Image 1 (spheres, rainbow, N blue to C red):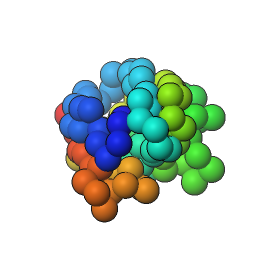
Image 2 (image 1 turned 90 degrees about the vertical axis):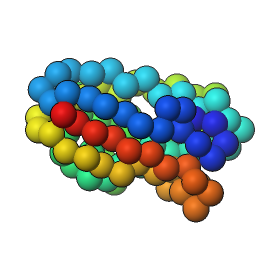
Image 3 (image 1 turned 30 degrees about the horizontal axis):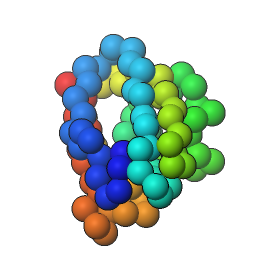
Image 4 (image 1 turned 60 degrees about the horizontal axis):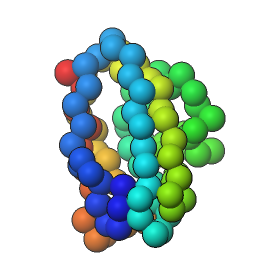
Length: 96
């Protein structure tokens, strides 16, 4: 993550496969990896990285977090930064 964009902004995962998604905020502002429907659909192995609402991972500048998960079924999900989506900080998550 950097100011007003995800790099990359499209993610492709396979259902039933365990993943470690490494997130980094290389910007100077706080950013969120917000994907409510995605987080409802997956099994998160380390839920402590999620915020209280369980729908996003928050990262302060220069912070890094790993999300361990399995997606049990295919789907397509919207991804935004809750504070910067108005400025185009959006993406897509696809589970095949």
